[in-house]
Amino acid sequence: MQDIIEILKEHNIAPSMQRVKILEYLQNNRIHPTADIIYQALMDEIPTLSKTTVYNTLNAFIEKGILVALSLFENEVRYEYNTDPHIHFKCSICGKIYDLDKSYDLYKDDFIDGHKVTEHHVNLKGICKNCVKPTTRSTQRLPEIAKRKITKFHTLRS
Image (cartoon, rainbow, N blue to C red; front, side, top):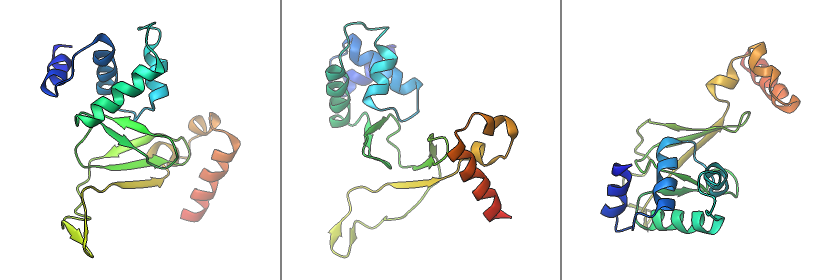
């Protein structure tokens, strides 16, 4: 926990219990959570925690460069602690989001057609390696529509 307090102090953020716990959750759960997921995970541990506190804390972390806010594939904003450039992959079957540590130089020039590029993101969507495996055990838990997607995927590959 001392590391988290130091990170907050280095970014000129007062280390309240709520801020420490939210950052600790993000460090320990690299799942690209929404603010609601963070709130649900911490509300039993911090009964006085409110969704407003979670949102305000996340926004402060973003402003100070500790976190990145992601709008990956839907209208919901997710948060992540990994601020290094990397690729996101979302499985269209199970919905899990993976960080892929592949390097890319998609826009390494500062200007493209006269436009200044200040950041870029690579978001991929497909079927993750766990859902691609056509095992009976893994498909038994999936809803019928997901089973049809996997079957269609394997038919196309054949």
